[in-house]
Length: 427
Image (cartoon, rainbow, N blue to C red; front, side, top):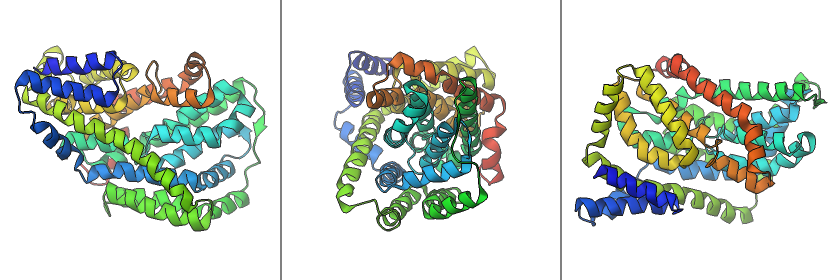
């Protein structure tokens, strides 16, 4: 029966049905085939979304929207400018650094792409042309779900159950996040050097950096307090998200003085819209996952995978290859919801660290947001800039390759992911 459920989902998606409706079609089709009482559908859906950890997702989205509307983004850009100094590709590096700081609160790539396109897109285009500027925005936005707090990591931890801690997953992402941000900035410098772009920005000055740090101190303190509290175990991810919202409001109203009461309805509407899509996906997928689990599909897949290979590294590489293909054709939230309940138990059966597997899984699908033909980040940026998809993908290729290099590095050197959580007492 489980194969029929997956077939319903795939057929619904192929005929162009929206994702939530495709999951709903799969759930209803599976219930019909299995003769299960249809009354369990709303019960499963409500139980899936009635979750305290999942409340962190809309709260982080609200915090990110408040940062953008409140002018906090401009402070981040000024601070990044002072930190980067006068270098080749300086504005591109500033965009990367500003995107990384924004990611410390927003946790989503789509909202970051929209924010960076509107705030930095015109200036980047003026200096570098449409192609390279849009690639910089895409790469910077893709840092959103890699750098904690990440909505994707929250969804994965929720779907995986008690074997994965949200705090441990956030900590595991710290070292890879620093690496990929530094690599992106280096790539911006290298491309600017090859194309002979002129030096940009003011020369680095300790005094200037100190002034910009002081001006942005409250804005910079917000992600430090929230993430520090989550990682340190002072409060949960949901409580940290609520604190981010509480801090963003007075900063926007009284520090930057750019946030107005009239902005709040739009902030809440946009956050509710994005959160509602995620909630609908999780609700419908809960029924699909239940049907797959009842049919023992995870156990069947585990038995088959172990007949193929007993080596955990080979298993990880097989999963990577599969997720590369999945990421090209399936929206990432659907992939988490459909595949985490299937592959997470198999990874445990192979003896793979659950936090390591969770990070690799999330990173793999995050990269898929930049790969055609169904790269969500690519579509957002194309819609906002008007660039042709082929040109955008061509300019994004160096950043896509570096992300896959990081993924392989984490597979063959797992300490990049597991060392810090173990150091802080997570097992």
